[in-house]
Length: 462
Image (tube, rainbow, N blue to C red):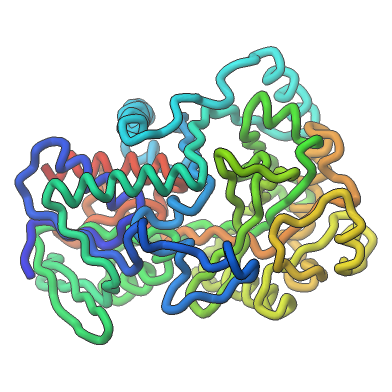
């Protein structure tokens, strides 16, 4: 097969690369290769089974058109300070300008016009005051909430738009390797059901998301693609009653708090807050089960969940952050017999495990029905666990009741970011014709900034 541009991965970065080229009237032939299925064929059986059935050959929540974004909470952060380090590569003003442009595209495809966290300045000031007193930084960022079910409808509309404008989508194909010759990328090798073939292209774009971070790291080592060790986030998903988070939910929708708790002073932050949301499970390679959170537009629970993540950076002699996080996840999965572990905060402080009977008697009932009550401290590294405990106590000054005995902690919450690919401002790697985008390249985190990177890539490929 031959084309002008081949894109590996149909998450936001890959989608918006093709979308921008189409919108600018490009006549170049574009092929998108996706390991999973189109949006309309993605479905998690857990809706009916109430238990994760470990779908093979991949998890439908993390894999398929729109990536994990279609089955996530679907939040678009409208501030360039949120979403990774892309602004340091392209400049803050261009990043914000492109965010505004991408936001308009999402609106064109049906995103909710309401923006959360832009009113009630007096209440925001009061929350910030309490955060400062607790030694935390509040980053109040305007949020456009798509909602899990609405995000799927939106990306389905984009999928149809690309098909209608001649973009070829190859579903069920896995990229096995890059085709390199004399320092230039000539395309990719793909396979489906054991049938392999090559796609030759003038430009190759790798945009495989967090799901493909380990795969891209392997390619970097095999083909000498310049990169540096990246960051990995290890943490927990916290769940409390909506009443505890009521003010923050109403004023900010999502409170992004950052701290450097003693004694280690590592960066710890909140992430992906879901008012009235549901804790969920995602499966990665090697049957690794990790926890996440969703929030629907219409369906609401009695709880709010959010992640607390500790950032880990490694250097000499160890430089395999993804492998490290996977080992933490595997150990936690072992304790939970392949399921997500959940423990009450008060039990952690008391040095005891949590039992199922105690969960059934608590005010906070788990929204992840097959989570296993147990002891997450038996698997969580000491440094990360101390950071999490001290950070929760600091957040309790901002949100009274957050550190209650019945607050639930689910584990493992892991965010895999690829070792950062070295690129110039035009996203050129040291391999001619090869570009790496989105969360898989280590420069972005989340829907909006990955979409921004794809948009800029599309402009430059035009």
